[in-house]
Image 1 (cartoon, one colour):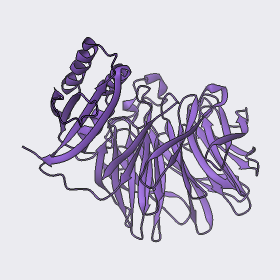
Image 2 (cartoon, rainbow, N blue to C red):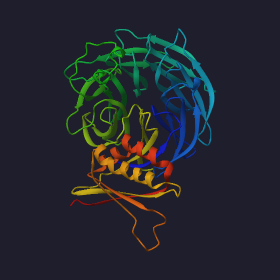
Image 3 (cartoon, helix red, strand yellow):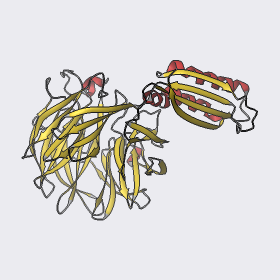
Image 4 (spheres, rainbow, N blue to C red):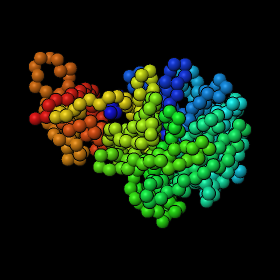
Length: 481
């Protein structure tokens, strides 16, 4: 199960991409949205501490496809500036903050327009940055990463009917028998492709798999990842089906057929080619509608745990992939906000964390969760106690209005089974100035998350915040009545 550990506000307008990096035994989180990147530290308890914020080129963005890596002793963060049509390279300083190292703009030769996804590929003598995006002339590009972070163009391959590189929103690399392969998802192409990477950074198409209406779910192919279990190499692909997009003109191929949602698993053969293998279909017990990010949480000898972030179900679905390449659902958490590529897995010691954000402009928060064994909550409910101390200058009318807004949440937020409140009547002198208590009852963890990040709750916090001097919150589980 997922257990929320912390959440923090953002300076960026929203969250589009989240990545993380270890440097000198410190753990850093990079949250990219419109106009900027926020930097946080992450400790072993999953607590986030804000460190710095950085503007993007042209103050544009959003920051997409961020990836951090070490190139010959220097740590860099590479950022796809989607609407800036550029790749930004930042050096990661010792304290986790960023220093601009280079800027690579789109040209007629390259495919950096509306850049979305980045993938670092390490070869024996050099490292390369592979770039995909969504533009009028789509394709896949490779750049050599120089020691100072600058990018030197190596090769660009325009999209054709044979390859799926129109709208590359997910990429994954795998090394098989000392040969490196790259796998891309084509959002507009409704399929996935594999490429062989040569030592000099050039690449060659191996094979492509297209959507169908039986055993593949690739319409709007979106997240792409992979794992190796035993001798088997698997590529896992999700999709945000075109039916979920309200902007019809945005979709190139409008003759798609909706046959449900599912995560597709492909096996990689000895030549690096993708072979359809299995699917996990969405049903009433899962949350797989509108998959936008798939993260590998952990890998053992014979299984892997994956986390699927969904935009339309507003959830994180945990799944297990066994050695035979069969994916099965484990558990999910309704986060209360849509996830739009903003999901990152990070490990500290024996603990596994997920850091998530949303493209919602009214949320502007990043959230950390620990992935841990599920706690039995059967026949229990959750009490959420909020104690408020109002500012001395707050008028009686303002306090009454704040109380009314709080009580009204029960009619606006699903999952709240009860709200009661009262004014402090204690004479023990230990109330510390708190005057109003509100007790909310939730049926489960999902309801609490939905409440916390619901627009009605965010509006309440925003509107009554100016008259609140202090707040004290406690939650506990108890037997259902």
